[in-house]
Image 1 (spheres, one colour):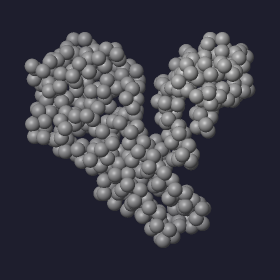
Image 2 (cartoon, rainbow, N blue to C red; image 1 turned 60 degrees about the horizontal axis):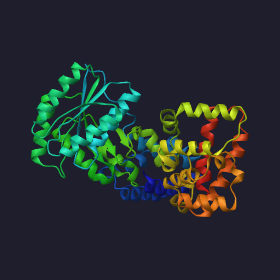
Image 3 (cartoon, rainbow, N blue to C red; image 1 turned 120 degrees about the vertical axis):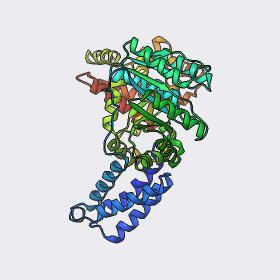
Image 4 (tube, helix red, strand yellow; image 1 turned 30 degrees about the vertical axis):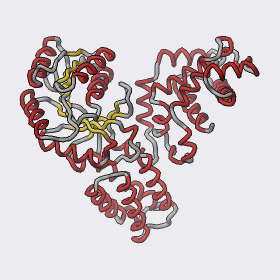
Length: 452
């Protein structure tokens, strides 16, 4: 996310870093470039205009002008304004109401509402330790009801059945009553979407909202629609008292216009951001962390949280103990590390959270994709158990067999062998064998993979 904007802003602001002092001329030129970068990112024009004016005011202030490194001080101003335009801080869900807390999800068809119901249910279950129920009030798409049922079963959420012969209000009221009887903490209600905003849709969802009076009314919107996402959110906010926004499909959005426009246009906070299709890929929206990503400074806090949530601690501890005892690092260990990286969203997800990732040449970044991890795992799986334990055996005909078995070329096998040797040497240097060292190994693996 924000790839294009990060590149443009980083290159523009880099020119200021070496400036001995800021003048009206170099600020004017820089702001012109920043303005173009924001417009290209599909940020709404009123947001761009207000942002540029605020940055200009801050840049001409005495504190920045008197700074020993005014270029860096200017970047601090830009960072602060980015945070402000996105909402200062994360605004969490209100879970203090009498249970079950009712959460209503609204949005256009195709925005990913049903998938988001499952993701949000899982997030509440795992991070907030809540007992969660879900129900679909989408009586126009039987497939949506079935989809939610399948998701609920996969994620161990309570599912309340509904069918197309019922009315949305009856479905919701019955599900809330059933959730009370089961002593659930939260009930999430999925609603029907349309391909566009229409009067019937708004009338129906307004009536549903009035009937159940949800604690949270969240608008789910596809971030790839750019500033249109903000305009659609405003239309819904005019009809419903929205309490927040969930941005979906952010992993496919290289611009970021929606994230930078919605708060300014609707006045409502972005509470969550969906970064992929997996049930685990829903993150709290932290404006300060997103601003840091946009400016190419990484997002270490989110990376640490992902490690805490997604790394299999039992496997990690087992691996740590193995290294601590001086046992050799083998290809089974290497495969486990690659799988841990997959669980954390893959190389691309980790890369954007590492500081300075935008300084890596574009051609190298283009070569790095998450299919690479899958291919590496395929190569390892094509090895025999003995070869995985004793990699020195892999020569000549064995390489040919492994390449053929994994659908790769011999040079691919050679690359992974070289990468493995580097990892093995690093593991030998580890003394403590703890989680931090293991994660250092995973980060090193990311960098080594990118140097391919």
